Structures are given as C-alpha cells and as structure tokens.
Image (cartoon, rainbow over all chains, first blue to last red; front, side):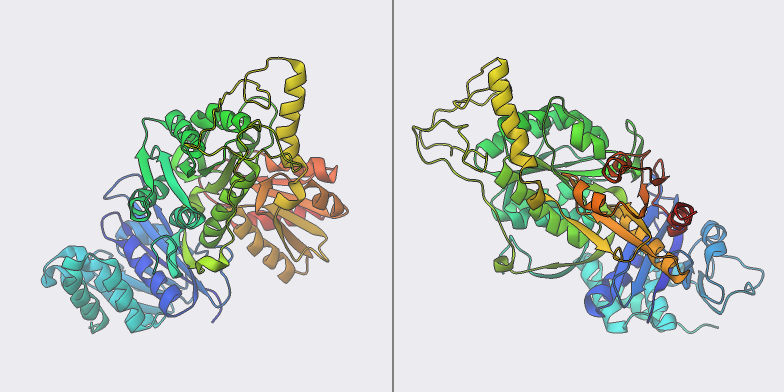
Length: 179
Length: 376
C-alpha cells in the first residue's frame, strides 16, 4: 500500500477530531502502519469548521497533511463545500446522510456511501457517539483499518463510563446496511 | 513497569512526546504559564511529575517561570518550561541570566505565528533568531529543531543532556503543527537512553566558577556546605561581582568558547539525497516534512534535489553547508528569512527563499517551485 489519505470534515462538537485520532492510532499501534494524524479547527469550542486528517503509508510519512484525500468523510454541508473540491478523482465519498444534502452523487466520485450517523446515535441514547458510529461505518466500507484494531482504539480512548455506549455505536455503524 | 520511562509504542502529539522526553531525561521540575500551542506540554507534566516524585508549578507569568527554573536547577533538579512566542519573549531576561550564571535548563518553545500574540492556534517559525540573540550580550545559544513526535521525545532528552553538560539554558524549538501532530513514538528501555548529568563540585576550597580544561566548571551541590553567590553581574571565579574589562574578557569569553569550541559535538543535521543533488533545500521542523516531499516530487521530474535538515539549528552547521556550496540552495521556513541569513553566510551566495508569514505549513508544490527556480 502506498500513501493513502483520509479526511473527515464537520463542525466543532461532532467529534471529527476524535474519529480521526481513533482510526490513525489503531493503524499506527495495532495495524503497524505508518500513520500521521493532524487536525484543523477554529478557536470556537463548538460550531466552527473542524477537520481531521489521517495519512497512511508503508514507509514513514513525509508531508503529513492530506493533499487530495482518497477517502473523504463529510459530516456537514459546509464541510462538503470546503473539502469536496480537493478530493481525489475516483475517490471514496462517505456522508452523514441527514446533514449533507446532495442532488446527486458527483461524477468524479468512485465509491459512495452514506449513513444517518447522528440519528443512529440518538436512537442508541446519545447523539454524542455519532462520530463513533461513523468510525464503525468507515472501518466496514473502506477496509483501511482492521475491525479489532479500530474497536480496541475506540474503547481505549473513551471514558470508562461510556465504553459500552461507544462499543454499541461502533458495532451499529459497522453493521449498518445501506438502503 | 517504571513510571518515568513508559517503554513501548505510543501514539502521541509532539507536545506530549516532548513532555515524555523530559521525564525520561530525568526532569523533575516544571514551572510554566500555559500558552497555546504549548499547553499540552504543561498539561502532561502536571499529570506526570507527581507520579515520579517531581514538582509542577503553574507560575504567575513567564518571567517567574524562567526564574523558577534557574532556582530549581541550582537546587539540583533538572528543570523545564514550555511556552510559545509571547511567553518566550518574556523569558528573554532570565534566559540571559541562565547564560550568565551557567545554569542548566530546558525551554520548549512551540512556535506560533507572530509578532506579538499573532496566531495563537496556528503555525510560525519566527523564533529562530530570538533563540539565538533574544537576550542581550555575548553568548552562544543551543537550539534543537525536531520534525516528528519521535524526535520531540529524542531531542528533548538531548536538550537536557546538552544543558547539563554545557551548563546553560537549551531551547527545543518546536512549532504548532508539530506540537499538535500525532504519530507513533517508540520509547526505549532505560538502558538504551543516554543520560548526561552535570559535573558536581566536590572540593570546598575550589572557586565555584573555576572551569576544568573543557571550559565548564563543575556545579556546587546544595546543602553540603558550599557558600555560593550567584549573580547576573559579571563575576570572577569565586562568583563575586567584578565589574571590569579584564574579568568580562576572561569569563564571558569562556562561556562563549565553551560552546563554540564544542560546536562539532553539538551540531546535528540530516542530509537526504544530497550526494548527487544539484539543488539543496534547507528546512527544519514541520517545513522539513514538506521539503522532503518536494524533493521526492522534484526527483520524479528528473531534478536532482536534496534536503539538508537541522536537528540542531544553534550552533549552526556552517562548515558543512560551506562544503556543499557548489550546489544551488533553497531555504524554506515559516518566517521572513531567519535561517536564510545564516545559510547565505555559510554558502557565501544567495539562496532562493521560500518563506511564509505563518498560519499554515508549506505545501510541497510551493517548495518544488523554489527548487525549479533555483536551477534557472
């Protein structure tokens, strides 16, 4: 595998930073890939634009930022406007179904997936785990990270009292059937 | 497993890796005032130092922080602070006091965009000359420039070793991008980590600033009956103020020479594909990672490019750059030309400068453009 770039964009408070961190950490520590995690966010605690980047390679990653993401995960309409133009031709686009409205899947998208991650999280008891629903879904549809690695990383990175909820969120996202 | 050296693989930010490097090096005192983008260093130290019997103190400001470091160091501890540009500016007075009193200490400066409060959450590399010349008077700086969390760990250990060996404040010049970037950090077992401790003065009849042949005086331990006087005024070998040209010449020349004469042992850099290079990019910190990609992109286009990366920026590796001066040079940094001045002085000609005022790292194409321009 040569260089692969994953970018997750949304707004502050959705947990896109943690989602990227969980995946990159799993790749680095458990899948033994070279992985770098970077983040971009505004000064606001919530509501501003927020994105995380994961760059994976077999060899040490030089430039650590996504240049043209192979996999683009979008969790808000604004993030779609910002990040979609940079996506690699033929890349994989994954969207939060209820938060990103597209008239049609753009022609240059190679593979398209969508999931109502926030609604699923709400049904599980707390919308705060929408990001982990998305992590489960990304794990399943892209195959960039092993399921056990991603799950282990999630469970190690969330507080003990919400571990069970996050595990359920991960599994539900992983097992989600696109209609 | 011991708590001071967390042996194994971790996925850490540059900031946290620097904190772990400090703990592994034996740092047991941290005084600081939190400031973005360095706050994670303080946060980690606040949690970790009590676990290993160390002291963490949040000071009233950066002047106090730097002063506390010097006091702790004379008290026998390995001491560190972490800051960013605005705080680094406030530390300059006591940075100089550390030079004058020959006090080991480590300052981690996670650079952000400036001048002034500038860009709190965004990148800058504008403190290079401040680390070198920010305090008044003649002294020689030591500053290290890591490019990854692993190097933040390794070079913070080295910063402590250099501070202890040469008895002066040493700067770890990081940057916002690196401080907030996560990557695997492998922490080796204790026996694989090289640790240097300061020389300790044993003879009570010997003057405290009487240097050995290496120009470095051993440091008197506290609580063992040494009567000492530590002052920012020019002092003689006994440590007492001696305000005249002869003492200034003798003592201040020595504190400069102790670094410049050992510069070859301190200097460290990496060369990547420079052997056959027609054009060499000079970069450091996060910019070196953009430059490395630019060099690979240039090679793919048939341009023989290479990278010269400082791991230690002060003392400056002028001799090696001079040896390479038959090549064309590009200097990339996130400021308006600081390392540039030293590179051009070493190669005795102009280099193509690819500077940015701050806020974001170079895109590799920006540096590639500089490489192409250098060969015109």
